[in-house]
Image: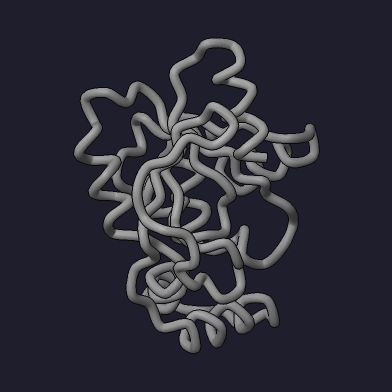
Length: 169
């Protein structure tokens, strides 16, 4: 979805860049692609290495949420801290802050999205790709939905879910 949107924006002469990780597998998050800048299908792509994380702790918390465990607020933040993220990606965004008018972050479930919104919520539009699941009801996700510049839903049902989880979003 991100690739399709970026390619469509570029095709319509809208200045667009992608900031992403070097990972290609959303289960392992292993850095497989080289860090740096490339142009793919006409879209400038900036790749950054995945940051240090504890995947076992993430899995424990993630599966706990999925299984109905009620994590306390500290555990919920710990869940997001151990999700995939990239300090270098955040630094790259910050270094380009004066040039970036709007960020589109997606999907909601990954730390890269959460920390991008947290870094500059006033410039970040969230395309959450949200669906009814326990993770959507956590405090970090609800806060992210409320704090970003706005949300773009893929379907009316997703919009209703966003509004129910984060009134005013």
